[in-house]
Image 1 (cartoon, rainbow, N blue to C red):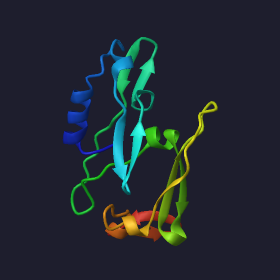
Image 2: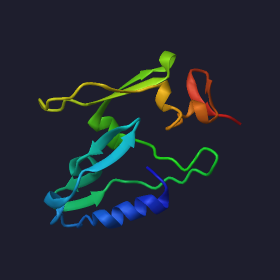
Image 3: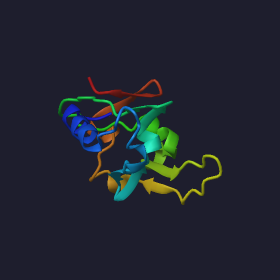
Length: 136
């Protein structure tokens, strides 16, 4: 999920045909995180049900100072294995191994990358009863 304006632009540029006629021509989407590219294949961002295709990107408008931002939801959580290391302020990603795919090594996004990509906590969030909660 991301800012409406960007999601609409991405959806328009992708131009996914409802009848799936251009599915095999769709590109991978790449998102730069901590200097690395996390990519999604069409199977990750298109819901293909029978002969119908729909883009699964959602709009989410978070106002400043917390936003604008992207939330890497189900498509990323299905595509990437995630490891959360709160003690060292790091998140690691590796391509999830589905049906015998070869997965590359774990990519780590740590405290040194926070200056370029602030985390929820560094943007004013706080822990509340074991969960993350925005400052009020």
